[in-house]
Length: 370
Image (cartoon, rainbow, N blue to C red; front, side, top):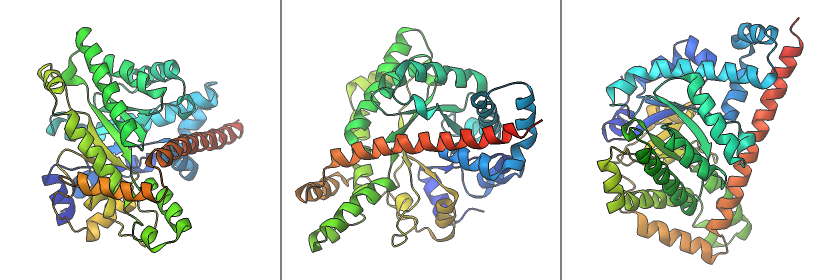
């Protein structure tokens, strides 16, 4: 049975998702066990996760990789087949959760090629391709919240495809993501698409904000700076939640709901603690609020399982102190806008680098196949 913290989070309306996927996790029954024993209600993947899965689990993919290579497929198509098979099978594992939660949870995400982060048209094209190829109702297509990604989100949503918007760091960009989602819904309404079938989450990255801000605070080195260590990320996410509440309280959103629209739930991503000095459950326990999703690496999931201390809703009503915290950081010369812009650029590049490493790993394996 789940420990109190995981069960209490679930009972309180927090959707616990796993930020990991691999062939071995599927074939061993590990994912099914996490669903049964640790309240896992969804799965997210990204280029770095697939790079680790295929490079470290070569034996799990060897037979399929050999068969695909002998069919004459190039490296990108081989990777697409391997990753979409994993995601499709994960969707099947999560299907009972999807059905039991009224299509809210039981979701599995796959990301478009990160090299397309600044190409709107090709992002839309590949999102539709992945949606059709995997062909599961509980799939989410991940699209990065870059400037080019925003219109892609609108077009993909308008097509009736469910989307996980990823790599969101700033509240300002998050508001643009909400606007892109709402624009997509309006187009879907106009085209006669059943809006009730469209679901979306907005993945707001957390721990990387603390990593970036703490580095700047250490450079400043004053007592005032040290007093703010480890506080920026949670405050940033809480302000994003405030933006979500404000946007879903408008008359315009009420009209969208009347058309069957589903709210685009905030999802807390990058919830593994980077600084060992911090409590390893902080990005879960301190961001607990009904209606959010928290996708966790297995280490964080296990930490909450073993010693998480659920304290109830830790987000509602925190906007004033969160704004005050960021005002104090701005006074020290740490710009929220500048930090988040750098993190977005760095996040896109990290996923591209992981994808290129994966291409190299798979190509080398293909070259050894006779």
